[in-house]
Length: 282
Image (cartoon, rainbow, N blue to C red):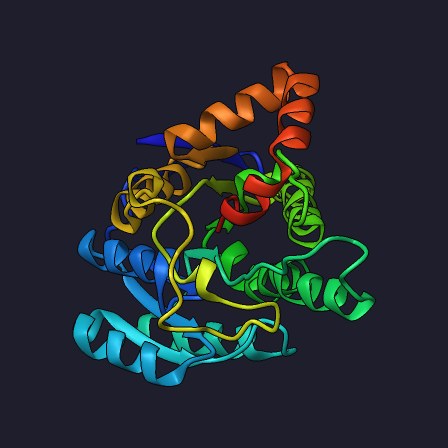
């Protein structure tokens, strides 16, 4: 058990999600799907939120009575609010939000248009803010928790991915500020920064369209399976930690970026072509 102070009182939190109600955005595949599966395994009730109705319907059917599908888009006003209403009607309220929905826009600043940057921020930044704001009233009622899935690229910027890295730096800043704002109201905010994790992320193009048969450019030995990554994220959110960097290589990258930034800059400059091909992260 751990304790957090909220409105002058101490609130006890279990280190698992047993009997909690959880909303996961981007739940149709990858990290989001793994988080949903693990939450149900731990005894939680889960609302599966994603654009691809057929995927979340199939996952909800597989997970059984503990899961409810909701087809929505974090770039649309009101979709998350309606998913929260569904969580309240079906399961009695909302305890945890996992703001996981996101994708990556690739290209140099000379190649990308303003529309590319706008599209990246609409999902990765404004989509997170919309999710947080629309879920917050329910979370405050139950002094809940928020987990925001950022990236190691919120610490380390790489050539060819300025739009994506900017969005993940913004998400990290959002978490840092809102963590302090919401703590007195009993709501925790945890920034989750995965490195290379098994997902569809590197098979999605700049228009956020999935290419099912595309090959993942990251070698299999470097990719962490989604299930253990999800378990680590769930532990961090249940414990109300400020942040959690997922994967050993991610922790090394963040450590180097914090303590030897010049070395990292030189290395990325020399290896720009390799970084562009392989360093797309969830």
